[in-house]
Image (tube, rainbow, N blue to C red; front, side):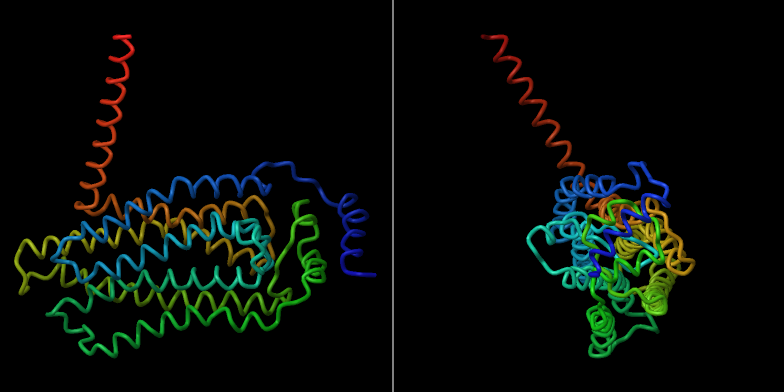
Length: 349
């Protein structure tokens, strides 16, 4: 009997007789797909505005940070767009399995490629978050801990990105037959959402030890980037905020302080979304806990990391916020003038 036949038999004989059916909208795929795709329509103008602000409105006194900042913004936007539109994943935690319902699946991009893209973008995004702090850290001339040798800086940065791009590769060599994997997933999650049986499910492994290795490897990388982030942030705070001696003018120091604190807020506020998501993911895999509603919330919260980060970017930097406010006020005045003109024309007629 083929794997698909056994899957059909399980659905007819086991699923309907044993499993309690969930009718909650928050457990359905629609609860994921519609908000994610709607977020794309709202996010694209926001992402473009933030990118323009970084390139055109960053003060010259901190211009050396601009490209590192722009690089971070690009990867955050790409992560958000991948999750919301290009991949639109439905995760089946605690298994490392998911159903892709985005544009890439529609045009026939292999699921293995989609998995690789998702993981490297997620990891490169985390590496890119470190870059602005590393740039500020090494731009402070009187910083005794700064890395003054260019090739050492490039080596450290390259190592982060190299790990990001290579991390998922070993996991691609042991991908099981997907129909058989579905049956093995049912051993861990005997009563998934009914849509599990009708959707294509991609799993990189069904082995519990493999899942543990995967999660531990991910946590090691997360801890590594977070330690770097803390180190660079601490030295920047020490020399830009608390130190009284500097070779820069008072105005330049104030601008650097405000800009650095803005970056800090932009990075830390979205972590309020990411940390609970990662914590739930680890708990689910470790304890073999299944809850499709929480799985859906996990994806939604993960997706809005880029949105919250971009709003923080515009809100926390004076130059960016002033430009955005002028843009909004100009649009409001233009709409008001247009409405008045139409009203007058109607009165004349």
